[in-house]
Image (cartoon, rainbow, N blue to C red):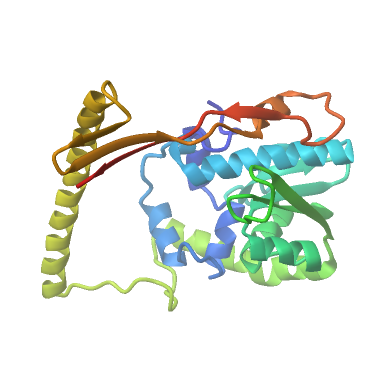
Length: 308
């Protein structure tokens, strides 16, 4: 597998050895998911990278990105191929672009987002604050003149959309001197300072969002008990799953509703439904109408229940 393909071990290793665009918001203290100190420990003590194919959110985001890219290419009649790059003077500063249009000197970033953020993008061309440093980081690496930013949403987030449909909105952001001043005077000095901390293995200054190291003995005992309790619960959950499988293996041969004394075992199947066939849509390079006519039948969902 090539490091050019996001999610592979090679790509994850390449990403871990430098600072990617999505890590700039962490360094600038704007991430809701990770602190600068946590990122530092990840860089200083790297673990064996694992491919992200089993990550539901990664897979969903990647699939929606593919759909959004194809829609954008059909609308603009231009290619927006993904690309990974390193800065020509500071190779530790790198980025994985969702898309790049070299003819237009433009980069493309796609984000799967919730209803409120999507509407803010659609109505006010408002880019969520946590993505801004990522975009500026990409401009620093590529020296692009334009940023094309797409938000995409689906029915699982906004129930008002037709079931199974996606909707996207793209804005074009010309890169200004003010943007470049922010990159040069504020963003990159912090990124470079962080890189130097990792090289020297000196932790960065902690902020209010970082974790405080604690060695309280009573806390340690309680955490040890909690871990044992959690392990037992996980083992019981696995045993429960195995028992249910054995029970349904017997009752499914008898009837979809079985009673044994006070126990009731049932299996129900919902009606078959129709939903968009995105695999077919992405494979078809000759479509004229975006997203129309690509549907497939989906079997009903089986629900199994034991009550007593």
